[in-house]
Image (spheres, rainbow, N blue to C red):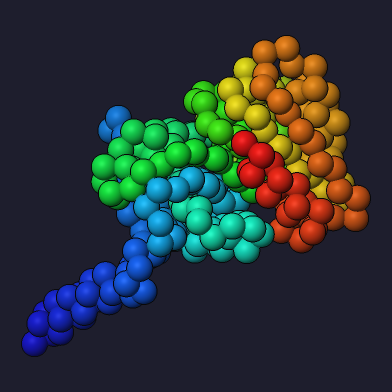
Amino acid sequence: MRLFLILLIAIVSCGKESLEADTSGNGAYRTTKTVSYDGVSVDVVIDKPANDDLDVLMVYHGTVWFDDKILEAANNALNGFKRILDRDDMMIASVVYPEENLLIGDNIAHSEAALLWMKNRAESELGININKIFLAGHSQGGYLVTRLNTMHETHGVVANAPGPLNLIFRCQLEEEGRMPAGIACTGLRNAYGTTASNPDAYFARSLLNFTSGFLGDILFVQGLDDSRIQMHSWPVFKRQIEECTDCREAHFLDLAEYGHNSLFQSSEAAEAFNQFLNSR
């Protein structure tokens, strides 16, 4: 009897999910789909408007570290970007990239797989026509979209408070006991030793190592009241990109009196975000 009830609940749940995916009758839906490309699978939360001929905004959430939190984080990121987006004819796809038991940066493979699926398979699998693809990310999501911009062309990228910028500086503070130990630096230390013994391994995963070769225009939004760790390296990161000779256009919006979530809190940032998307 218990097995029957479990099966019944599962059937009802699946049916409910399908109904929730398209209750409007006009072709609009939100659903979570597992996608694969080149042997790498990742979940994507898709929020599709009524139209089938559309542009796509792919968004990447910030750090939560544990994989039982990433679906919630992806939905929160989708809602946050949708709230500031000034158009309702754009499909938003929020990538549920994994974090648990991975070294910082390893999930670039999952992030890339979602982008390549969108570029090469989404039209046939979803029955839509895609005109333009944009990327946007917050915090670690901003780190990922910045790195993706060195790997694949899109129509534009927006990165809010991207990081980690400098893992040598960040993890050295932990090693010296000047801040509590965190998951990212503990994993790197277990894999590579300390920042003093193997600085190259830490730098290789820092965003400061990815400041050239941008293949699409990019907008960086940074609140100047962000954490000490972020602001320590932000001027260096910004200068390196401004000096890049093989990058597409890079734009910076620095916002005084705003912190890590400035893109979602500042009307000036929201306006710049929409102007950037709508002008490309």
